[in-house]
Length: 385
Image 1 (cartoon, rainbow, N blue to C red):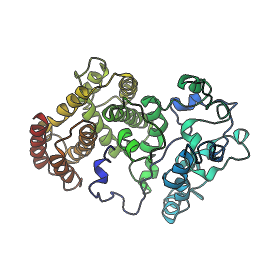
Image 2: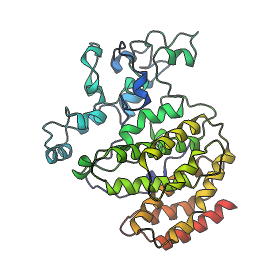
Image 3: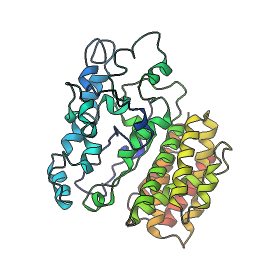
Image 4: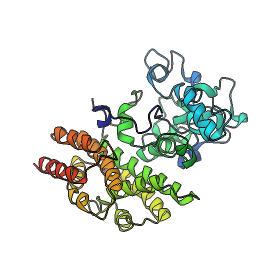
């Protein structure tokens, strides 16, 4: 059993007290997942999968796991009825967060499904349910269990190809990463998408591929997150300084991977623009990186080369021209990266040093670049052994 992300091992004070950081999946993402939804396919609702002969018990219990253990079941929709959501809504003159698209698109994404695609069993209050991730079920529900169908056949009839890390990241990232600036100013928490750690935290109701590498999922997810942040910055009429720094922090991490693998030539493009990024160019390059990382034949050696490259970045935190807050945001993103890379190795051996780095990166106002740099150098020495 793979370990949970580091942020769950050490208590981390929320940066926005009183706000629940929602872990959500998108139904109709503005990315490639939306292209797989047929205009002729209806959404049948989670109960269509719930019979004991299917996923509701007996041999298969996916519906039971989702309905009883998964945060995505009911709770995202219920969050919109809380006093905190009402407070955020009032700040934006939102009368009812449960029906306003600014909130419901992620918390109750089934609300965006056109009425002509509703089956009689359809319920908006299901939150993020089976069809949110797997696609509208009408076209594939009766045939996806046929023994003569392989995975490609199921994808061809309308199921979303979640075995592809690129498709999986696109299905999740829109709601896990992107929050409009007005919502943030009203009190919504910042979000940080990380595909590998969130897959580990998700109550498992699927069989993962036998050649799964957490580091590969991490890289695909980070590239998708970078694409989303740069997309948002390229479209925003008002500059979001915090988002710009967060984008720069992730861009800085990704640029450290340049020249590690010839299959990722776009990394050099990203690194060259890290000081003053052209967001549209970064968006395009990050999407290409996500695709290629998803298609790569991964190995433990690739994971270690990335881990080693990031561990040796201590000198960057000794650069006085970089603002302290930017150092802190880079450290924050870096430590989470080191955690997932280390966890995916067969014999992780630097946990103690990583915990120290995590503690040093907890507070943006109190961040000490010199102390973090020294601790990172020590971490690199342990990893190098």
